[in-house]
Image 1 (cartoon, helix red, strand yellow):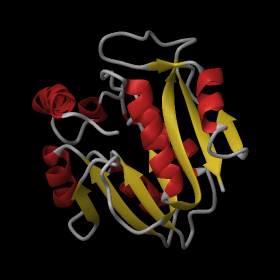
Image 2 (cartoon, rainbow, N blue to C red):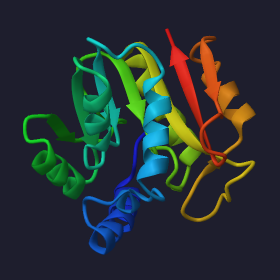
Image 3 (tube, one colour):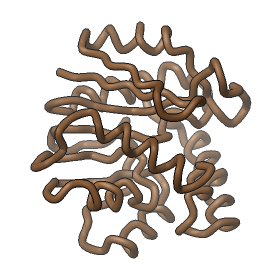
Amino acid sequence: MTYSRDDTERLLSFYNNLIAKYGVNDPRSLSWRGEISEAKRFFVLCEVGNLQNASVLDVGCGFGDLYQFLSKHCSNFSYKGIDVNPKMIEAAHLKCPNVDFEIADIGEYIGPKTDYVLASGVLSFKIPDYKKIYFDYIKKMFEISNIATAFNMLNAQYHNDDDIYVAWSIPEVQGLCAQLTDKITLRQDYLSQDFTMYLSH
């Protein structure tokens, strides 16, 4: 399963309104509080494994911020970023003109397998039937990774679940992920409202 047309239009409207308000150089346009929290999420995602000389697929790449973060912390890696939002992909190309960015939904994405598949904030926007759709996304990300996938979520213990944001029960997510692999690592040591999962092959 993947986003419906209505889901996509609602998602684009939500983020395009933030872009109009904050611009393409502000993490608040991605619904993050600021650069510090964004960087903390990236740091934990990238600890999923040794990204040196590895290939990375960035799902929901936004403005390419994760690529810029990786470039500061890793000297050699192969990267591709995908996002459903054309405005974000356009901005990513302007910021990083020689980097591979593509307008794509992970549910429909067709591409080669990648060592690591990373996703920051992708599983937090509330849509109908979100549990089914987002678990299908997790399954797809894991299937196209050679080594591991890592993704973050909002923690229902500390974050409200409302009409905009999905807040997840950690035991429920662990149970779903256990259908894919028994190599699961939970990270809760960086931001109180977040958690990150590593699924390894």
